[in-house]
Image (cartoon, rainbow, N blue to C red):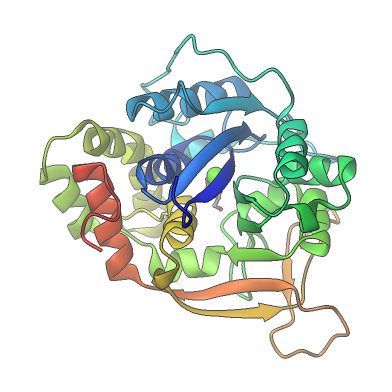
Length: 322
Ligand code: RIB
Ligand code: CA
């Protein structure tokens, strides 16, 4: 570890592009993945635990990076999985890993709290799932914000349409009570659904370049796991494409130069059941009295991201060309 190394805990509902975010982090030079915590989200909990272990094992980090099982349900709401997007199991529908690798010996939220207390100011949380584990950690340690270095969150939809309902993005919609608490109590860097759609899309041409590129294990894995989501997007949007919300966040964390603009706003989340469940209120015009403490990434370098992603798939080194 050198002095630029960032020590990161990844909180994930491992399916689909969560796996790619794990791979980016695990293969990046200046990121030390301290541990992975699993949160309710994309698919059945046991699948996500195995998916995370399998993904880490692909790049030889499963022995060094322990997977901790966290919240199996949202704080309050009942939950529906998104296996209609990612395939049963979350890895394309035909891959159901059974690694035999043991999980950590405590709850994911306890692990986050313990690491933050033991290493004040050192740990960055990269949250690419609903925020249930984070809210539980805040319940146990109200000073979490001061104990952590940074908190990065993929979630919410900043004054744009959501992906689960017109009002809401998946991670905030699944557990809006947890998202509200996290947004209110932590200084968060937010990578939302809006920047995801604007700046992380892989179109048919790029997907073909990956399909036809060097035949590495990571590239084949990407092709396999994205098959159902490509079908879903063709049906729902009439376009062969994928979005990379979680990998986008991770790329920005690894290489902050990818962030072209970011602005700090007051943000809140609607936790009520109903039409606006999970809605992200972002006070862009500063017309409320709310405290501005959420830094929203508004623009992201798409070309550099594409290059990082291809370098990760083809060379196992996301910063090879930087
Ligand atoms: O809305 C995008 C988020 O939900 C990502 O974290 C992705 O994993 C999806 O399921
Ligand atoms: Ca996710």
